Every structure is written in C-alpha cells, then in structure tokens.
Length: 335
Ligand SMILES: NC(=O)C1=CN([C@@H]2O[C@H](COP(=O)(O)OP(=O)(O)OC[C@H]3O[C@@H](n4cnc5c(N)ncnc54)[C@H](OP(=O)(O)O)[C@@H]3O)[C@@H](O)[C@H]2O)C=CC1
Ligand SMILES: CC[C@](O)(C(C)=O)C(=O)O
Ligand SMILES: [Mg+2]
Ligand SMILES: [Mg+2]
Image (cartoon, rainbow, N blue to C red):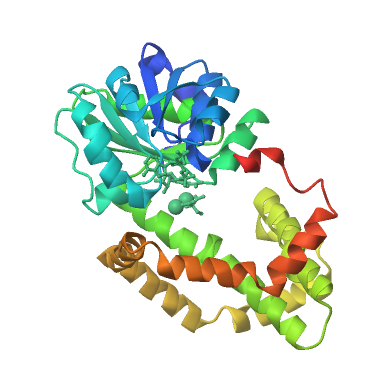
C-alpha cells in the first residue's frame, strides 16, 4: 500500500510565512486560490493584461496583480493556465522574475515531463495534481470535504520542496481525502491515459454510442438521453460511494445479470488492446506532439469536434431537459 498523507500528517507551516502566486483564474486556478486563502494562506492571483477574469477574482476577495508582479512578489508560483500556453507565458513573464530560492509549481506535469519548460536549477519545482476538475475541487472543499491529490518534486533546491508541496496539498484540501507521492512522469502519463481512455474519451463515447443506437432504432431521444446519460451519474455515484458491489446491490438482478453478460461484449479484449496502444502513444510523446501541433495551428481539429458535438441531438435535447431541472446546474461552474 502506498504511503498516504492525511491532515494529521501534514503541517501548513512551510507555507504560512510565504506568498503563493496563482497564475490564471480558470478551472483549477480559481479553486486553488480560494481554497488556499480559506485555509489561511497568503495568495495573489497573477493575470495577463486585460484579463476578463480580473473582476471575478476580485469579487471572490482575492488580490490580483500582473503575472510579472505576482511572480516578483511571491515565494511559490503555481502555473495554472492551459498546458499549451504555459511555455510562452513562462518564457516571457515568469522566467525573468523567477529568482533563486522561489518555487515553481504545476497542477499537471506535461510541460516539465515533455521538456517544454526547463526551470533554472536554483528554484524548487513541484507539482500538486488534484484528481478531479477544478470546479469540483472548490465545491468539495467548500462542503468541508476534500479531493484526493498527488504530489511530486522534480527539483529540491531549497531542501524543503517536499514539505512545501505537502503543505500546498493540504492548503487546497487534498489531505482531507488522501495525498500520495508520485513523479512528474507517472502523474503525466496516468493523467493523460485516464482522461482519454476512461474519464472523458471513454465515458463520452460510450454514452454517445448508446444514445445513437437507441435513437437510430426509433426510440425517443428524451428517453435515450435519460437512459444513457442522465442516469450515468446516479450509477457512478453508487460506484463512487460503495464500489462495484455496492452499486450492484442497488440495481435489479435483471440489470446485474445483463451487466455481467453484456459488459464484456461492449468492452472487449480489443478495447483493452487499444487502451495499451493509447498508453504507448502517451509514453512515446506521440499524443503530446499531435496536441501541440493542433494547438499551434489554432486548434482546427479540436474546434471541428467541438462544433460537431454542439450540433449533436444528444447535446440539443440534453440542454432542453437540463433547463427543466434547475437543481442540476450549479452556479460555480460559471467561473
Ligand atoms: N481543468 C482541470 O480540472 C484540471 C487541470 N489541470 C491542469 O491545470 C492547468 C490549468 O488547466 P485549466 O484549469 O483547465 O485551465 P483553464 O483553461 O481553465 O485556464 C484558464 C485561465 O488561464 C488563463 N490563460 C489562458 N491562456 C493564457 C495565456 N496565454 N497567458 C496568460 N493567461 C492565460 C486565462 O486567462 P484569462 O482569465 O485572462 O482569460 C484563465 O484565467 C493545466 O496544467 C491542466 O492540465 C490539472 C487537473 C485538472
Ligand atoms: C479528467 C480530466 C483532467 O485530467 C482532470 C479534471 O483531472 C483534466 O486535465 O482536466
Ligand atoms: Mg488532465
Ligand atoms: Mg486529471
């Protein structure tokens, strides 16, 4: 069993007299900034000139500075802007102000692991990666709970980088749920694999295929939506709370029998062989290269996919149905 760190194992002291600059105010950044502040730590949010997020951060009671000034002032700089934009911002606004003794931190290891950012040797470099979306990171913290997180130290110039990283993980609420140590390589490769194969790519394409199968067979799209998308959360909530056996306790014997008989017809040995090939592309850097190439061309492939899905019956009918269930949409997702 891996060594797990909980609140009782970790002190906030290594960060108590320090200033943390959160660069960006998107999904992860707004949650890190607000959670750290609510844990009693000192935070400044660094935003680019003319940022549309400035008002939101200030409204949340956070101090905002330019990225350059935030880095100059801070002891710990957490870079939470999109992975594809990090190298340019690092070169132009962070590196010139990242003096010896500071720490540079990440929420994902992509740019360090794939060699797109090379910090100077005299700074600490660590990551703290919450295992979940930023908006949920804030929601669970505000509810008094926490999100499992993993941390890694790439450079320990100060001799204190591990304790600083752990204190950071505690500050965002990670040690309420459990924190464990990793490497930049392990975090990057497992995170990319999880989001592509299971959490995002796997789940959405499974839902879409199920929805299309029912609609193409002549069933009502609304029923197909409830059956293949809306109910996913209710089933996953049971798995999340009680594991597979707990979920199977709640469903009918008919459903459980169908689960065992049909599940392996849907997710086959071929699916697992494809997962292994996907992992290979992540490990070799092939996926990273194609992502960066699309980003550098202005995301033609990604934008085409976004538009295609926006027009899909599943999204159109889904929006109409969710609008009739106002209890579903939570305000903080608007950040
Ligand atoms: N999304 C998530 O839940 C997770 C993300 N991560 C990692 O966290 C990091 C941040 O991801 P995420 O939260 O999704 O990012 P977002 O896309 O939500 O980041 C948006 C923020 O980045 C700022 N930004 C975008 N481009 C630039 C730029 N060129 N220069 C300066 N600021 C810029 C935006 O500024 P403005 O406000 O001015 O528009 C905005 O504040 C990534 O490394 C990601 O892999 C890790 C775990 C989960
Ligand atoms: C699952 C997607 C994720 O890795 C995350 C929310 O953890 C991301 O990069 O957004
Ligand atoms: Mg990710
Ligand atoms: Mg992730």
